[in-house]
Length: 330
Image (tube, rainbow, N blue to C red; front, side):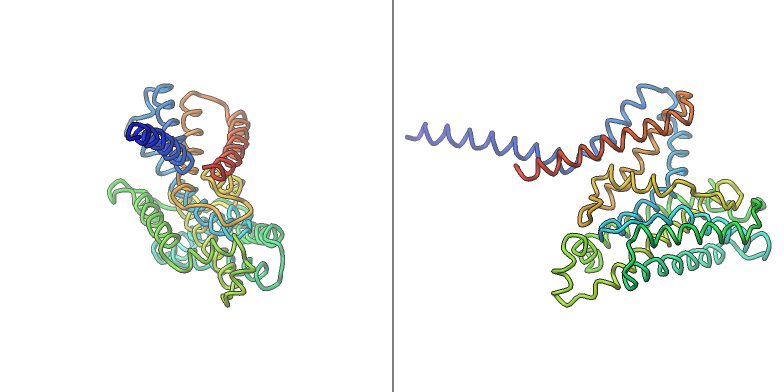
């Protein structure tokens, strides 16, 4: 009898370990892909793991990762924000004009640009939450308006920035502030999502908005706020790009909305809402950055890069479907 119980316990322990390992893979698949990609990239190129290349990846992805975080909160409510690329252009052009034409210090110029972004985000959020428009349509309208604003205020010309102005936030002398700002915001929004009522309610709205409304929570305010957050982070990302290029251009951010959505999807977010995590969206953004970086190091032309990214997005969606099925059986 004792031997039988011992055998049953061993078998149960084996099954538990298998389930735990399977659940670990399900919960951390995005991070596993990221680590695997780093290993593969280091094998394909000798220069991949150099400090200069890694620094360049972080500088390049600081902005796009912030855009992905903002997009994630909109997606969590079941919405979509197609305006982020154009809002980035507003951030780049407004900050550049304030600094170059009006002589404003770069810090208040950044703050003012982000405030303009918040206004654009609130405009989109009001259309979605209070006017009942679909997020796709409302953000498409804001996308057109924001891009038009960028071209109007710059008169279609790139605005050059003098050295020692906005480029201070990408300076080695100050320990690359845009990287530090990005890390700080990642920590803040990861905390907000997990430990604050705002983060939990946003997820709940995407999961079951009717139940949230029946609980007496005014969901419209939360939906509107996610678009404001998305636009604020997109504007700041546009400022980052202007700082790195020393130019404020109305063409900044074209197509960035697709990369932001892709980063969220690769990170396991559900476009139906209610599922997604900040750190996984960050990992998704890094995965896209690493793919572009390694292809550049291997001298792969830009057009094939887009094709490869497309297939990676498809693979990520399939992985999400398989993950959802596995979660039901674990």
